[in-house]
Length: 82
Image (cartoon, rainbow, N blue to C red; front, side):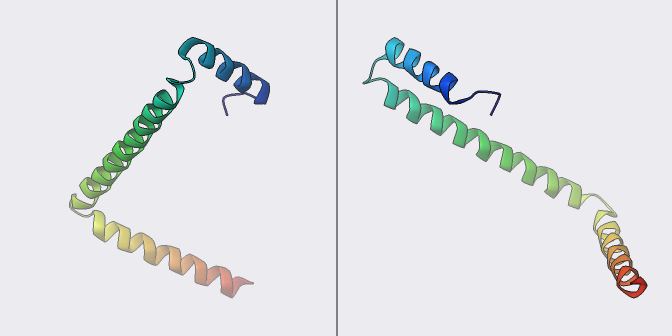
């Protein structure tokens, strides 16, 4: 994780404890957790919108079906070749 080991994380937490105090750290942690969750949810929504947009383009569904058939044919030829 970003090249941080246990000693580095302990030092960072110790500095945060000294700067913010013991009463403020849980609030900061909860806020950070909510922010990360919101960010991940937003990324998921954007990915879903991209997939929906891509699938709404003309010919994409047909090309996806053709690709799946080609992949199945490749799998069959691999099994028959062994």
